[in-house]
Length: 124
Image (cartoon, rainbow, N blue to C red; front, side, top):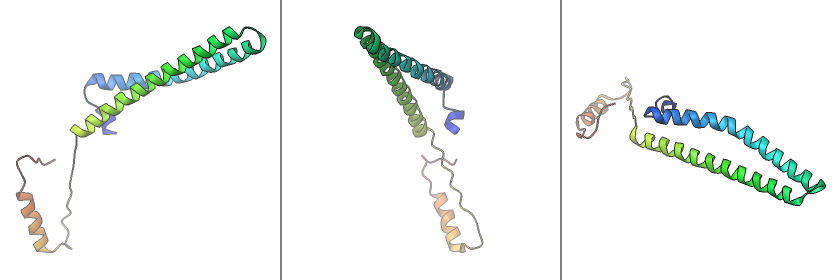
């Protein structure tokens, strides 16, 4: 959810939103268009020209090929952005509870380990 709230630059957020809107509109339109083309192809096969039926089937194949290509490219792009964001925006929080059940020598060891941090590590 944090990635969706702040995926990075504004153009990435607009691209994700735009692709989601396009997907919601194009999916039903492609489905209905494909169904109508196939329905017309069946009607043409039974009642009239086979050439028009073949044309409608070719149109349906082209329509779904373009739709699947766009969907896969868009999905791959957003997965790549998410993986890049996840790789560069790691946030790790380690919480060690201080309870009465932990012996004092273990608490002192935990304290010594926190003093031995390398200069590359940062506290988050």
